[in-house]
Amino acid sequence: MRTYRPFCRSAWLVAAAVAAAVLATSPLRAQVAQGDQHATLSEGAKSHPSSDKSGPSTPAILSGATGATEADAAKKGIAGKAIDKVKEVAKSASDIFRRVPCLPPKGVSKTMGSLPHVASKLAAGQPVTIIAFGSSSTQGYGSSAPEFTYPNRLAAQLHRQYPGADIRVVNRGRGGEDAPEMMRRLQTEVIDAHPDLVIWQVGTNAVLRDLDPSETEKMVEDGVARIQTAGADVVLVDPQYSPRVTERAASANKMIRLLNHIAELRHVSIFPRFEVMREWHEKQSIPIDSFVIADGLHMNDWGYACFAQLLGDDIIKSVGQIKLGVNVPADVRTYRPM
Image (cartoon, rainbow, N blue to C red):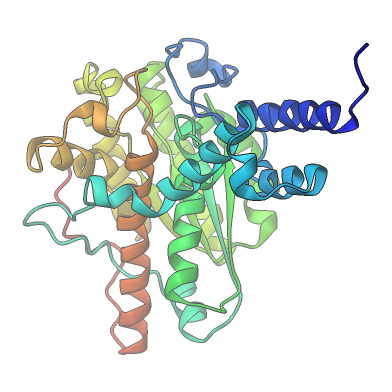
């Protein structure tokens, strides 16, 4: 006759709970398709977990349920593997640039002009709201966890630079969209939030969907004007350098020139993502698959991290200029887009 042992049943329940948490946070879980573009993505693309809070709490749940030490828990099969996985994900946030350094484009200054509104508020220690507006690469498709998206990476960098400052970086990315869809939510999801800076990533899906460039230009210019009228700084972000985009080189070139024209016309900044990513590959000899996932379109954790780092450096530099009384016009950019 077998003796009933409450501990065994408890341990199995805990192991099952931990296994569920790991499955929710695993970078290898296939992501549900998002928007028009996501319908065609590779099955190898990485995805977000449902929550970034389940991992760190796992050791506490295990310890509370069994009374065992963390060392003992690590020996209990799947529960130990769960804890190791949580630690591995947490560690990757800090050591990602130790594997591949994030360097500025070789021989090219990153100055993209001043951001007078947001820089003045940061310099004065006032609360700041930054909205990341865009499609799937703003939403973070291809990252292994929410904290590895570019808006969250940017927020972490700014908080390190300005500890104690009240800085909010709000992610308003939605997969598959471009200017037509974004303009329909510009008022409610961007302007009504009273941002100090809007980072608008646009144009990639227009290239992939063969949208009329002249219509895209009209909508983006109108959107920039409305954001400026609301009192916010604007940074436009052009398409990414990735196989799915470069195979449409003529359309990509046209979109990049179009966005630069809008930036010059409206006196706003532009971050030339295409040129920066091309520098990674052609000048820094970084393989494409080191910063683009298997779908040939979206960035991986390292790509998002380096993009956020360079963008954050520009924001920090603009704050320094304001503190020194230097105001570089937004339309004076030393990047050299294609």
